[in-house]
Amino acid sequence: MAVRNAERTADHYYIGNTPYDNPEFKNENTYESMHYPDAGFRLLALFRYWNMIQYYFPYRNLIDGNWNDVLLEFIPEFLAAPDEIHYKLTALKLITRVNDTHADIQGDSVLNKYFGDRNAAPDVSFIENEAVVTGYHHKALGEKSGLRRGDVLRKINGKAVAEIIRESLPVTPASNYPTQLRKIAAKLLRTNDSLIVVDYKRGSETGRLTLKSYDLKTMQVPRKNQRKDTCFRMIRTDITYLYPGSFKNRYLPKITPEILKSRGLIIDLRCYPSDDLVDTFSNTLLPSPRKFVKYSVAKLTEPGLFQFTNPIQIGADNAEYFKGQVVILINELTQSAAEYTAMAFRTAPKVKVIGSTTAGADGNTSAIYLPGNIMTYISGIGVFYPDGRETQRVGIIPDIQINPTIKGITEDRDELIEKAIEIINGK
Image 1 (cartoon, rainbow, N blue to C red):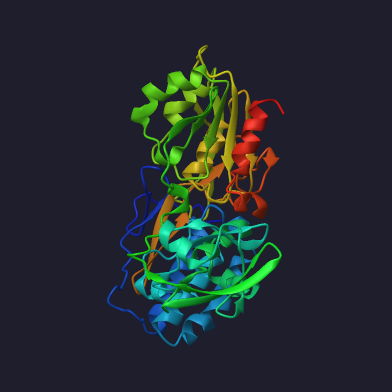
Image 2: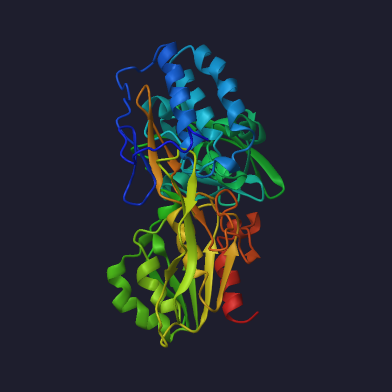
């Protein structure tokens, strides 16, 4: 108790808080010239990361297993790493163990090469637990590949997709399994070879195709959560649609009057918001202020202790708020700021949240640097509902569970939007 209660200052050389109260790990040497650090520096990477999680990760209690055991488990693995790629894969395996979608190794050329510098044109997602072609990164090249929307990939270069998933899970950081599958799907057709052989199923038929691959500059893969789309449109004469992935607050003066005249509003949060709608748009949705979130933040004078903030509220007294039906769409692409936005807008009087498990990673991120110039992140503050319910790992729970189907993908239908229209129409 004497150690715990010892007087400490809040001003430290190695640790501080950002203006948003998430931890800032300061003055940590990245040892960027050490592409393959020696055993001592590899252990430093392990100990540095383990301690940062131990004392400053707000969701340590949600990690699978005992975090103390992880340290002992990884000491021999870091010591045994024979070269740069194995060292970085070991670090990635460690990072995966914190069960945080924000955690990943960012922009590392060696790991990018390991996972493949080239990509095929078809876009793949996991639908009904199958690897399904959902579109193309490049339409013309994708159509030439021979694969169609709705095709189910069974093997890639002779290896069953189920086996690829099993091998990939230990090095795929995410808060939950659906989001791990999201990340694995993005790498399924990456390669360093010019050709990829795929076995696929189309309806009751099976086949095999050899796909061309393209370098990542030619085959620019857009982020699925920032697709090109108008931020606002009329889906029906009296149903409006808002896509925050391309929304800007400067559009509100033109958009808001159209929304207020409509009978229903669909907010598609299967994206990452390109601007902050929470403070600017909440007045349109709410008749009065509503509390929607509270945080847990690290107390720097007592490492390992986190304190709850008071709940945050949005909105203002507004008799001219939107009185129609609001439907919010979510899935595994709904992450961080998008989850935060869903929490806020869910407080509207007449709202339904539909879709599936979100990424379960909310809160401002904190950067961590490890020897060998490894850069990763963690969710730096805890994000909770005002009543203390968690959002990390579990994500935003929909009111109605709706998942895309292979049939819907084949027919190029958006089944979540279809369901949203049904809800607005009272069906």
